[in-house]
Length: 174
Image (cartoon, rainbow, N blue to C red; front, side):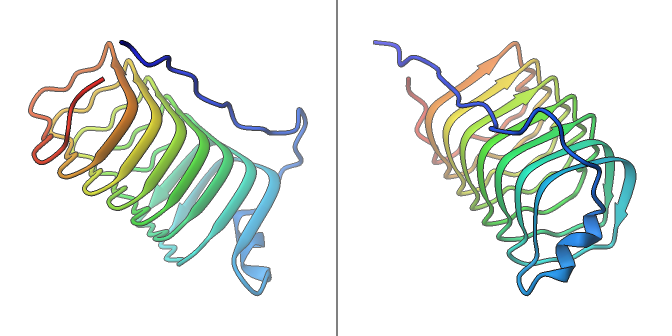
């Protein structure tokens, strides 16, 4: 029996005002909500427990960024470069990565639910010991990606390049 794939889409207002990523730092705990961040580069940022809700990133390049234990809810990354970024132990819910470069992206020990990866290059990305529930990879390159000891529940790989992918200790069944 095949489980039906139903991914909840991000719940984002139809119009968002531009915001500056550094606005997240003005709170006691780093948090940013209801904004559009576009056409910029975010460099050398290391933030633990960053919270982002109802945010769209368009054409954003992340250079040398570590956002371990990030909490993303209702977020879209479109045409972004998150290569070598770290979201270790992140909580990622109702998030879309569309046409993103995710080479070496580290989602180890992250919890992903209702997440879509669409037309992304995620070669050598890490999902080590991650939990993925209702996650779809569509037209993605995942060459040499590492899903070691991950927990997959209703995860689909549609028209993806999964050459040399590592699923050691990961249960693969529908």
